[in-house]
Length: 209
Image (cartoon, rainbow, N blue to C red):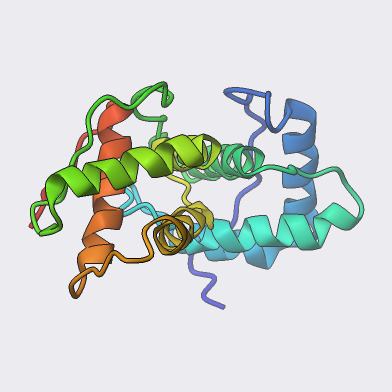
């Protein structure tokens, strides 16, 4: 393990919301991580940068896995995706504070309702059909869309993105069995779903190549 970046004691910070992972639960879990799972935290800080390049922090996904499967044997842990997102986000805030890095505040606002479906410019599927698919998926899985939106807003995807993408694949197979997508069109449909969520939450959209 590269220990060129040393783990500092993590400060206790007030959680931004405690509906899904309380202050008490957050403090207890992070203390346990510091005391018993230093390697897990070390893996995160060695890959933490002043500006995060993307949404996929594998170190946090590993840390939450440790929380659920190991720390959960002795302490209460989040039981929902939203709780895991909030815990990972609060852990990141404390790590960045200890490393003297700028905070990464949540972006935009919570997903309320989707009025516009943003399609990737490489999606060749009939646009009306694509919008109908995304709207149907949203109406069928509003809780999953909300969790996906919160993961994007908090810059903590964990395994939520995979759940969302796999859910879309299953939804297509079940509800649109006769739909035959050209090469990569399922990928661009997934990207369109992501762009739609970002737009609905006021998160700046990335450049679409």
